[in-house]
Amino acid sequence: MQRLDYLRESPSQTAGPYVHIGCTPNFTGLDMYGGDLGATMKTGPVQGTEITIKGIVFDGTGTALRDAMIEIWQPDAAGLFASANETRGTADPNFTGWGRSPGDMDTGEFTFETVKPGAVPFPDGRMQAPHITAWIVARGINIGLHTRIYFEDEAEANAADPILTRIEHQNRIPTLLAQKQNDGSYRFDIHLQGPSETIFFDI
Amino acid sequence: MSNANIPPKPGGFIPRDRNWQPDALTPPYKTSVKRSPQSALLSFPTTLSEETSPVFGHNMLGALDNDLIHNFARSGESAIGPRIIVHGRVLDEHGRGVPGALLEFWQANAGGRYRHKKESYLAPLDPNFGGCGRTITAEDGSYEFATIQPGPYPWPNGMNDWRPAHIHFSIFGHGFAQRLITQMYFEGDPHIQRCPIVGILKTQEAIDALTAPLDMNRTVPMDSRAFKFDMVIRGRRQTYFENRKEGM
Image 1 (cartoon, one colour):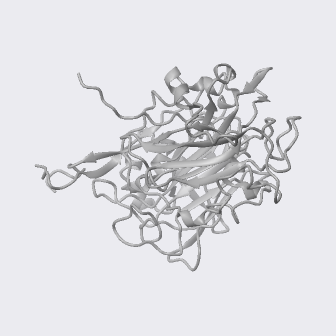
Image 2: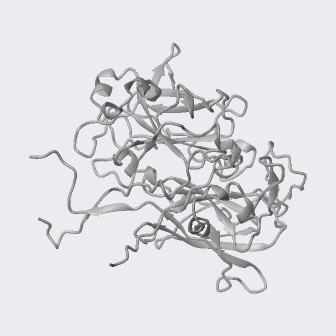
Image 3: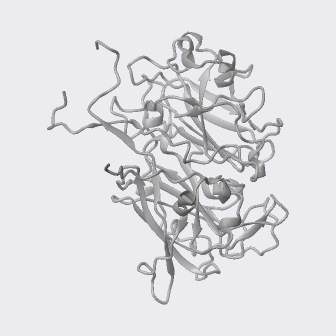
């Protein structure tokens, strides 16, 4: 028979202990590029509700990772992406939608100053609940982990979300929900394994 | 059904081949043991959230961003080590060049030492070497940068594990689903076959895919040797058919 001539995706390798040198050099004390990419998601006054998301990545022993890098990607408050592939409209010009955090040097806690995302449709046209895509890499992680940050205060939308409703173990859904804190910020801790293991996605 | 005059639309991304990519749990690489998810991943087709990504323009790049020999060096000085050029293309699974992809790379110096406060290897720092650079691929997906060849170095895993010389790459294509971090190794390095991190790769074909050959055709005589390293990121399905509810 004929041969399929597709190429194979490059194999992944761990980001290693020094991913911050390459992706957030200024965080490590290297004065490069005039600043770290993804450090700021807002370049001016933004539309919608401004929110803060904080969290820590924990390993299977409950120890905080201090050598991880977390990236998030999301639409603006109207559900539009600041992307060349966005064909439905023009996103908020003052919002990049993309954030990258090396976490705090001592505690590992990451912080994103962003906006509450608008809803985006699933391929079949149904609306998804507001969510943020997250990607985690670190030493010991052989291939970057995708997950999603949904919001606990979007109960109605979450209950109709095409992906959340498809999850077999509904008792694990809270691992995908950012929890509103007393100070108004959202908390989204990520557990790489253990009883609270975050649901990770093969997308 | 399909109209031959209408080109197919890009569909979702081709699913990632998890039999080809490394597993999360690889005990010989000890750090993976407590950092690997144990539940099955939740599989679903890509949506707009994964089919879009931020745009990085060539205008954000500085003149020395892709020159690690000079981008941290004092004026008139340069980093110590074998001068090399690393070049290649970023392709998708269809073999098409990916333009506008952001590549970020980082590495140890010629002695195998990283410039990082948590790094304790006794090899000295090079005052003229920072160890990071970046570039954005051209219209045909090509890229290149100048650097010094990094050295191998010992690391705490087994009692006597050494990393082969390598350069880390972060690749940002046009969809968040394509996001990838990998490492480039050098042809002929005897540490490749001994390294537990290389060892997570499942086949010799996968190791070869990350091993850059010496490229004498691109070498600059009396100046720099060259190594060629192509990278492949996920492609999108091409389709006349779209997902939609029956009857719509």
